Image 1 (cartoon, rainbow, N blue to C red):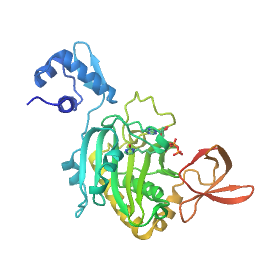
Image 2: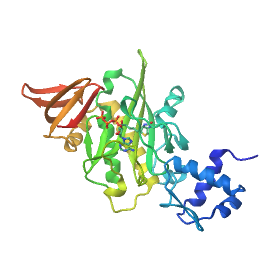
Image 3: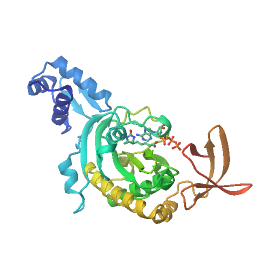
Image 4: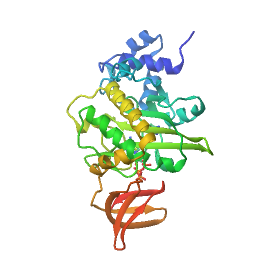
Length: 324
Ligand code: ATP
Ligand code: BTN
């Protein structure tokens, strides 16, 4: 049976993964394809965000070697007793969408990871730039027995979980931006997108999605705000499978604890990482902008802003915080 396009591209990538040069002819022979066909597959892989050099007389080469995510590798780094299902996918639209489509069949902690997303999303329908093999795109299912109100502050607890996973992987100095962003050196390193479906009396089905930049290609252009990746934050080479395992285990612990005890166990940690603590900021609330000083969060995870009228709490998904 002939291979699917996805299979051909996966094989091609596994040959290129070492980071050495391979001629079009050698690749063609290895995959039983013409050089023109190899060239077309390379173009498609480049469109997925892979940095592939093409040098006359030498062939094709990845800008940096690829370290694929595999279930086997991830499992070796998981703590004993970790039992939730994990799916490792190649190219997909959005890992959050993938989990949402299976909501009714999943158990708590069911997670998927992908090498690339073609329709990665952030809050308010914004785009999450998701090039191949250079980040973590992870989504996890969790069912919460309470209603929507019980989920207030969940994105803050998840931000704390991401910071904790990074500390386990040797990365310190992580800050959090209300309500869903993870920062390094004042720039966006990761984002959290929680999508919820509730049914009266049946609790809420949620998907918790995390996008974490590890080593983005140099030519990433579409991110319209300052960003950073782990490669710029640490000198230690980071193993993506190990990082994925750390993230999976801190996330399952966090979601279980949040379900039992709410936001309380995470608040102090969040406050200690608040990127805008005591800074002049503005809140964008729909068409309105409110300026003041960031004063952290209250017990339910609402952001506290000090204005001339005193300190006021703001909550709701429609608010964005920006430096003043
Ligand atoms: P806020 O959450 O405060 O409303 P935001 O600009 O962070 O504001 P989000 O919806 O949380 O918005 O995130 C989506 C935004 O993140 C995109 O509009 C883009 O600016 C940025 N972004 C997209 N992809 C990446 C990425 N891989 N790394 C860092 N930032 C990204
Ligand atoms: C944000 O900052 O607005 C959140 C970005 C969340 C991106 C992740 S990547 C994995 C999961 N799948 C998606 O489509 N989005 C989230």
